[in-house]
Image 1 (cartoon, rainbow, N blue to C red):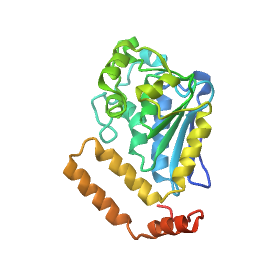
Image 2: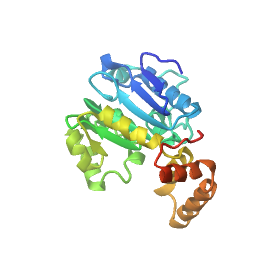
Image 3: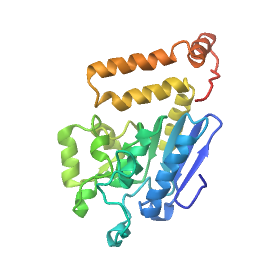
Image 4: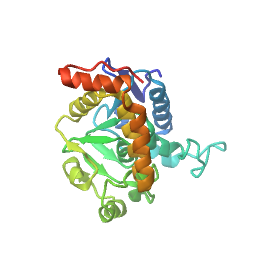
Length: 266
């Protein structure tokens, strides 16, 4: 994927990809080109060799201010798929912009600062881990515009936010800070330097057996929806595939020898 005026990707030597929204002049608001660029980035990351973790951030004054208000004045083209059409597996295009981070095979850490409203918050919620600046302005904004959250939020917030708290945030679209977000369940860590903290977490993950990390993410993906019997079986299937593999043995040897492991990439 080539960098453009909406998003950039830079893969480091440690396997950590820095993915940045680059529409800083519009606070990384979501217009049609932004949706397309995010989905293209997801495709590129899926194919990327040596990828071990992703850090997702926004340039300028915001992570993502949500939907670009110019979308309200835009008439859909006749050939544009309707919202109920599943154009990306189980998602429509807007939902895919948030869900693709959960669908990626590697962990995603969002570094959130400035403003994170509406669709921006749903995209951040698609990350495995969220590191948020304490002064970040955040809101589930859709009811302000007479709409409901529809970019995967209800699927992504399960297990993160207590039901009655989520209802209040949705119904009132009240604004809260990054410092409050941790108590609400929408931030994993609060940090004065979210990008540095997110990158440090990603680097730590990149230093683990990449096959085991991907297996753990697959197990997390099914944990909410599967029954106990199915979860127990999936744990055993994943573990059977990993045990005594080259990378698993290397993890043991590196730990015993107190050295940096040398893993084979997926």
